[in-house]
Length: 148
Image 1 (tube, one colour):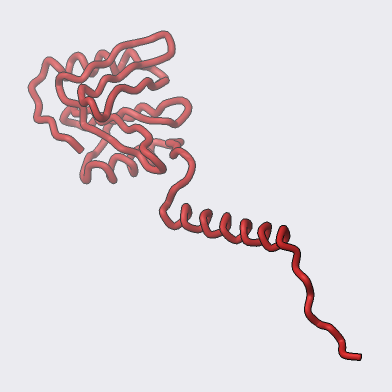
Image 2 (cartoon, rainbow, N blue to C red; image 1 turned 90 degrees about the horizontal axis):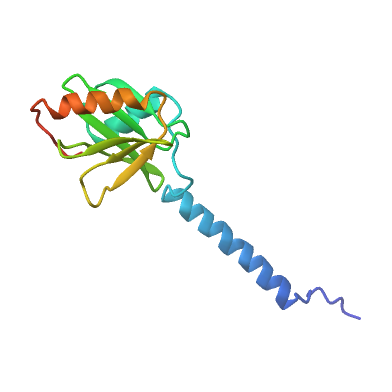
């Protein structure tokens, strides 16, 4: 009597294993494409690194980080202000032009970048009124603006 070594595999089990393999491959692809959670700024160094990726050579002398880490404002010695905001798994940033606007709100500071595609953002900063004052002073001083 021959021994039957073949094992019958249930189609449902095969489908389950195939699904697990597919999920694993998709997770690996997402990791390889650097897709993932929304980035977060925790320290001033995090903000400096993100700003340097956006605009090489931007040297911040003042940094305001959102309390939840979802963005930041950075000012350089020339008075230029950069807004950092999440974009996918990285940060995007713009040096704000003179027609950008900042206003205090009950929940923090609203920054309108004056760029339709970059839009507006609300940040909860420690002392938002200082940023509004600095922005108003800078808006009255001619400076070169650049997009990052």
